[in-house]
Amino acid sequence: MRFGLTGGLSAIVDFGLYTLLFKVFGLPLPVAKSISFIAGTTTAYLINRRWTFKAEPNRNRFIAVILLYAVTFALQVGINQLCYYALPDQWWRIALAFCIAQGTATVINFIVQRMVIFKIN
Image (cartoon, rainbow, N blue to C red):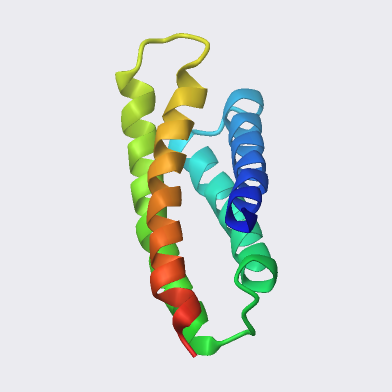
């Protein structure tokens, strides 16, 4: 439940900033998605560490999170761009590409954080 709420809030931060940077400010798609990913991911990490998994700061855990987020960053930006350009030019294209990329990254993040990262002492 907590992971879902945290993910929802982080997705709002990510999608809101992504849409603003891409549609309003005209940044290139991968640049807008990169910036919004960093903002959303930072939000998720801070809330998950304190509230969802109730974990104290830990250097090894932080390094593991950085590695996980580097992988999910590449996947999410790549999947988002691939889907965006593969989908028809409709009003829903940006949202669907975002959801597919976000969904993939969320599943990976949850599994790795729950099974590995927040078990690191």
